[in-house]
Length: 623
Image 1: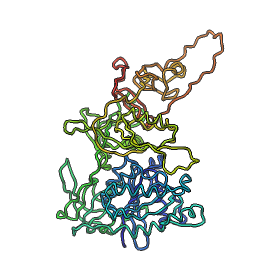
Image 2: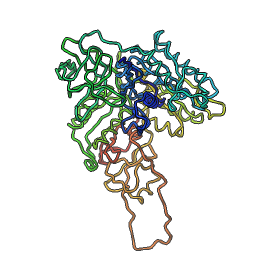
Image 3: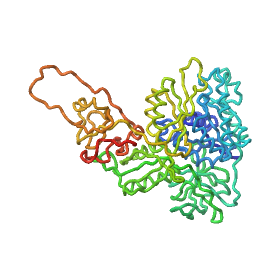
Image 4: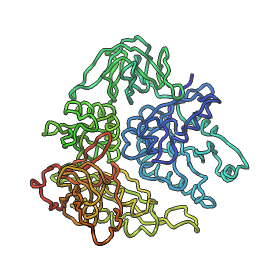
């Protein structure tokens, strides 16, 4: 059987996973009576809840006499490491671009990686049925934008001569003729994804095979089976492998190459969404090998010691770091498993083995460890996964990683693209300029009709530390209508300091339960994060102070009851409101002298020093 290996790449929310849904359906992967959920490739609970792809995943379809291996990749910039390591498994890429939004920061990132790997790229302009672009030239503008991006990123003439399809992934159709789009939208013509199948078969080359005679495979992904243990996923570069073969794992240990002999216990390949056992894996196919518990991404599996190791997978370095600590709060162990430092260390090391975009470091404190990552969302996903495993621990405020060059301190800079309503322009630009952002472009959102609500597209260069903590403020300023995306631009000289958070914190001064009477008396001092009846302890942050300093308060104070009746009837008074904070909002909000306490049931913020007589309420500037 012929083989084609292709990945689906795009900016977040441009329709990758929906397109894969229809590719699987129309290729006959599912039985006619089979009930199939939407976004079948988003298998993680967190992916379904958040509507984003987090982990790259494999599937396959059969078109005629050709097996097409498809890899669905994440679109969010924080998970760019998943895209980088997957690119070496495929020979072509389907680049999806939203017909209204056009080429956004992550489009540039994924396209750059595809061009560097010399992949054949197929451009699919998706969501051509969006009402705001009907009757405009926006679709052709997007094609021109993408072509300019190809030239800017140094694509070869062959790569820049890419096939173009116009699609509505939500309805499962595409066409190579933009003149048919209107007829397909209004239903006077019908179509399916056959044009895309045809282009994949005709334009994506057959797998490039290695020159070695023996078996050779680079591990690009890992999985785990309760029955088989650790599973290595990758593309076979040369030779073949069968169940029972004795092979060599060419890995690394303590920074040094280490070879380990092993026996293959099982060989599997992808059939639709299922992993099925096969007799052998042949050169060019993407499959799974079992038989060793020490598999790591970047290892090479070789038929014998004479077959050399392949170049290890290299991904862009992390830009932020976060401290993970054992839970030392007074409520430790009440709501989950209060893990000791050894188990916390093992859990974080396991994550960094499976995710090459994360790095692990020891610290000077025995029960605290540093995890280096691409962005806040990547860390929030890791924290949420550990929380759902029943673990208790604490995390600190993320800090930006700087580096020294020629005696200068350099910090990471991001290129941020904002699509906002026109009335939010003043507040948003002020927010970004306060955080050392420089406005690079200001123009109307492309492809708008005269009748639609006026929107603007702003482009900023801003330090990574300036982006930390802006997302929730940005959404508030734009009333939830703003879109913000960014990509890593490079390192530049440090732009200066600014106050991370203007307001101080309301801090509980004793242990007890929050009482409505006390909260009503303190309501004019700030806003609370927790409701009446919440258990608190000394040093726990319960709200945001309206001034710039911290304030220790007694929220457990109850009304004293007497047998003397009041002369006037008491008026029913209730709290005006609470600010319920999510994990990501807490990560954005906390300061350097605070921890986030993570348990399976609750997320709390606390001061690193709990006793109020041992810490100052005056906050330092430059944080």
